[in-house]
Length: 270
Image (cartoon, rainbow, N blue to C red; front, side):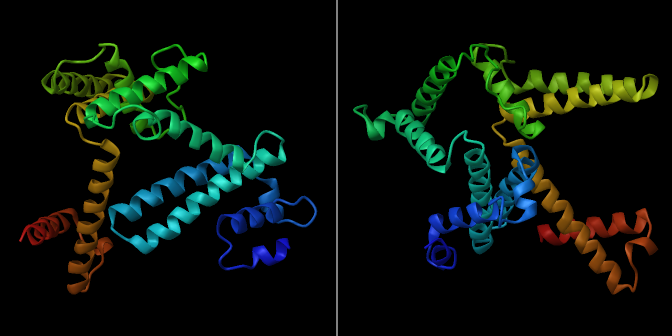
């Protein structure tokens, strides 16, 4: 019985799917869940993916289990919305990705040799993906790079695609020169132009910074997450040191907090 499955603590994925079907039932379900569509759920999907990355970054494995569950719920939710619309269902989603993984790993599931370097496997992977894009009539070099990706991540993907056809600087030194050029243009825009031009030049600078990350084999999203975590950690230390003095940041000033920031840096390196 469906109710038995919904309340079965060992029900696994079938239980989760049954719960989502019940939540979306137009007669007896949850009004909020019934009202949702792909567009309203998409921001939650993106947020949950980043929370998975955050748990991994912090090494919180029990949190990771919960965050993976939240992310899985998003896939089940989208699939149920699609099922309600008669577009596809969860099994179609699972079978589609299973077929794709088999097709992309002929050295595991086919008759190709596994005796390949990681670099060769990456090239083979890109060849297969290019064929998939061609089958979808995506013939442009940049076709298929999702617009909904976080902007920094999409910048790197766009640059990687362009680099495959030779549209790329030969080394990082050229990118560094371009960063200097874009920084000057941003300053000029800030001095003489309006907010739209400043935003455009700022975007150009960020785009080149993403390119530098690619050339240096750095994941810019990961690098920025680490920088955010470091800033948070050090600022919280400032708050703690101020509390020892019977003060809050509102009762302090930049000179004092900057000195405490340097103290926090020194403590971390000790």
